[in-house]
Image (cartoon, rainbow, N blue to C red; front, side):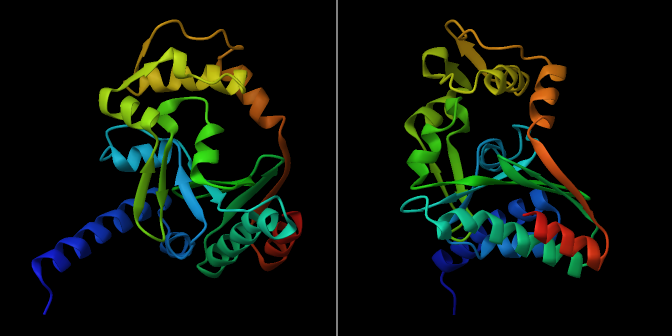
Length: 231
């Protein structure tokens, strides 16, 4: 017989599983992510989950963490995950688009915009140090159904306020765009926002599209083979 504590834990797990499924829309994708022990959903998507949905999100960013170094094995982990998801979507009869850039493997399908970042990180802390805005320093581990959040992230999340002194500016164009995005999502910025590059939609689109190298529309067995070869 389950105890009340057991039932509460089961309910908690079910909630996070459902939240993950609501973001990726396809059960086969959710099941693959839930099986990963060394990947996290982080940034805006994790913030969206933690906020009970009142903070909007765009895509779902997935990161490989726990790599001891940049060995071939750790570098190939994002590629393997992308391949598994492409095969699962194809087996489920779902047409998708694969976009390969120097930055990420992006898989777009009905209700799904998933970015699997190609860089591996030694830890969640190292990943957070790569983020520019403190509110993004939130990670969800699908396998454990647990969240990790930095002190900066916790402060920004609970107050919906970002201290501009906490903003890292190593990605000036992307940062400019994200400052505007998180203002629209209800965050206030205290202090002077660091000078960053053009934050217009057109400039950001040009920046993003310039990084795309290969697009494959996966709608047949042959197309799947081309997509896997492009990874």
